[in-house]
Each structure stands twice: as structure tokens, then as C-alpha cells.
Length: 640
Image (tube, rainbow, N blue to C red; front, side, top):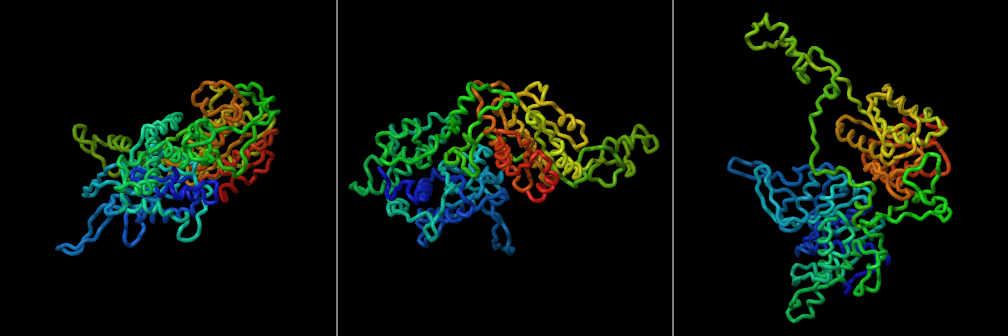
């Protein structure tokens, strides 16, 4: 059974019709309140949100035809913007102010549309609100003297980049049942940017249309479980989401079926069949032609071209025939002198194979980050002079940063003179002592040293300008060593932090001899964790950070092996390189305005393209090791 107006995505407006089907399903089914669009161009979000608001207004039967009210949430959203709203009231004593329920508490009659332009940059109060409201039957508010209970009916329209999905909490992503990749979406100009609404869908959205009962058959439930049987760790929400999407598609077919019955609806309700489940899977691109069971006998004639199933390993590009013969039976760890075929790299600007998956967090690289929904512990920064490490004690000039122990010791010297040893300790202003603190660094240099890429290459001239920039700006230095000789665990990188470039450990790291393994992905992961901690803990003081990666891009240790500490079985091939690129993309998303990245490469054949690919993933540039980096730090710091 095919809904009226259903269209093959291979046609020119296939993506627009797919998105219109998703929005109509969300407006029709309250259980499908969350819509998540991956890689949607920001300039197209107003047209999509306007269409969604008009569909919600149509479903409420507003006689004026007004769209549903919209609320935009971003990184600056706080709890007071979500749950409470100041109101002006006239009382016996004049005009006064009071608080009432906010926009998410739904004081109005119709559903509201909540728009999130970038889900990865949504504030923690906004993320918690999405987790609490999406999929909930009831909600309660107790804030500023307000006690309010309601049934959440708001619809959420969020956008996110597919590479940022691994940075979000799985509890937040699971709340969005309708997911769609829209990197190539181009809305039409005019009042109908997604195309005209079919008459049958408009009838189904009308509030006065009789809505018969929808039942899920046993065959449909089995089809849902069969589609999601290979997705580990997805939980039960994905199966519920797929079943609810199938129920919404069944409702879209319902008015035509109900019109053929004497009483306006089938006696046993509308049955959800495996055909609806198959259409729901193809709607969110879960159904793929790569699976042998992808097309049952009841499926429509035209199949949709789909990417691989979420949760399965992505197919890697096959190397050339000669490369396969040369690779032979590879081993997990290769020496720095051996050259193993790595296969062709992805072309610049080519979308990731995970971009069209409904669950890109399953294949987004090295795994989920520490994306918690709890506000991190913070302290009052105070004055800059009171934020550095303690280096001494002096006579107090104010009461901002007192040293209580030294103050008590100073007052104890004169205890016998002031009140005797039996009375309380008397402290006068002359006894007050305060801490002397070193200035806190406002810049940070992170250096990733790949020792296995050195060979006969002298990397001192190439790294010297960056170290000089750190010395002049008094930046702290975080050094990550990859593939150093004499390491107790050669499958892992190690790191240390120095307060300045004068730390002797930096000179020792630069002179370390190379080892065998190259855990480049783990080294970049340690660098990303250090940058994340720096931006999080020094949000009020850290001005900028510079990431310098000295490597040839040949990582022969997968990230999973580095984390587990156990060598894997079978050939490594491109696994270590792909993990390094995936971690680099996560680092790029950390600080898009305060982080500068550069890759220093030795220019060793035959894989001269690997450093450029890594630099592109980091969002930085490439500096050759032949001495052309004289002004690279200043150029990166000033112009990016």
C-alpha cells in the first residue's frame, strides 16, 4: 500500500518529499515529537521550520490559519528561558510582576515548535529539557513558586552534523525518533518550499477527521525486530520509534480506507502491516539493498537506494589488485621502515559513508565521548591574580585571597604580649597574610610528536617557531609522544604537561629515539582530551590554543587496540589511519574560534597525501619540514 503523494527519492523532489513525509508524520503522531536532521544547510532551516509550524497549525484547526508558535534554543539558553516567564499584573496595590509558566510548559492550547539550530552546541539546560519532555506522557514544573502539570505536546526540530553525533549523549539522541540526513536538500522558493501538501495528507491532519484505532499486527512487530536485530546497544527506543513511524504512515493511508467503510472506519481498526514497517525503514534510510532480507514479498516495486545499515562496520575502499598482493597477510604492528598498502583515501569534500545513516553515532569513529547531561563543577574565577598556583606568601593587601595558616602563625608570635597563652588567639590587621600566585597561562600549545616519522629528518627547525611562540606568549605546553623507543607499552601514547618551554622534559621528548608501533589515533585522542579540559576549566581565561602534529600520517595501531592494550588479530590495513582521521574531526569540533591546528610533515614517500588528509580533518594547514615554517605560528594564531 502506497500513501497518496508518495514519491520515489530518485526523482528530482525525492528528498523534499521524504522530509515532508517526516514532518507530516511528526505533526500527526504526538509520540513522534522529535525530528533530527543531519547536515542540513543552516540557510535552509528557516524554510523547514516555517513549513513544520504551518503543519502543526493545520493539525490544531486554528481558524485563523496561524502557524504554531516557535521557540529557538541555542548555546546561551538557561533554565529561566525555558520554564518561567515574567508577567505583569494589576493588583490592589498597583502594577506588579509575577512569574508564570515558560514556553516549554505549554500554557497555550496548541503545540509549540522548538527549533534547535545546532544540537551539538545546545546548552545543558536545553539538553536536559529535551530528555525530560520528548517521549514523556506528563511533566511537572516547580520553579519560583510555580506548580504546574501538563502533557507535553511540543514538537522539536533539531539539526546536527553527522560527525558531531558521537559527541552527544545517547540519552539525548534516543529521544529523536524521526531522523533524516539532508545534506543535499534544496527547498523551493515560495510558500511551499517542500512541495504541495497532498489532499489526503491535509485530510489526515485536519482535527475534525475521524481517526480510527491503529493496531500493530504480529507480523509487523516481527518485521520491526528483524530490522533491528543486528544493532547492538541501540536499546528499545529504536524499535519503538520504527513502529511509531509505521503507525503514522498507516494513519496517512487511513482516510482513504476509512471512507470505504459504512461507519467511517474499519471495525477492527487500521492494521499496521510489514509493508508499513518497510516503508518506515526506507523513510529514515534504515532499509538498505545490501541486506539479503531487505525486500520482502509485500514490499513495493520500487526500492530506495540506501547506505549501509547503522551499527554495521562501514565498507572500506578496496585497494588495487597489486596492493592486495603486496599487503599479503598483514600483522597488527608494522615497523617504521615497512610500507604497507593503505588503500585509496577519501577525496576532499566527499561526504562520509555514515552521513546518510539514521544512527551515525554508531559508526562515527572512536566511540562516544564524555557527553554528560550534568553541569560540570565550577568555581568562581575571581580576579586573575587569584587563579594561578601558589608560589609564596606575602603581607595581605586585601581580603580576596588570604592565607589562614600563615596568618595564624604570624599572630601566634605575639600571643604572649597581646593576651597571654590562656586566652583566644588575637589577630590584628598587621598579621594578615595572603598568597602569591603565579600568573595563569591564557594560551596553550599542544604538540603531538610522532617519533616513528623521523628517520633521517631533523624536526627541530620545523618545530622551533611554534616553541618560540609558546615561550614569548608564556603559554603552557602539553606534549603527546607517539611511537617513542623504550616505551613500556608501545601500543599506547603518553603525555605530560609543562608550564613553559623551559621544562627539561620537552628537550628529552624531542630527542627520543623512534620505536616500532605508531598509535597515532591514541595520541590525537589524548591531545583532544587535554584541549577539551583546557577549554572547559579555563573558559574565562584561556584565549586560544595551538595544536601542532608532527607526523607522516601513518598510524598502524587502531584506537581500540590502544585502549584495550591487547594486539588485534588480522591485518590492520587502514584502520589506524581512519581512526586518526575520525579523532581529528572530533578535535576540529572542539573550539571553532579559539583552536588553531597545523600538521608538520616530513614529506616522506609514498604516502604524501596522508598528512594533508589529517590536516583537512583538523581544519588546519600543512607545514613542510624543510624550513618553511618560520612564521607559521603567528600566521595560524592571527589568521587561522
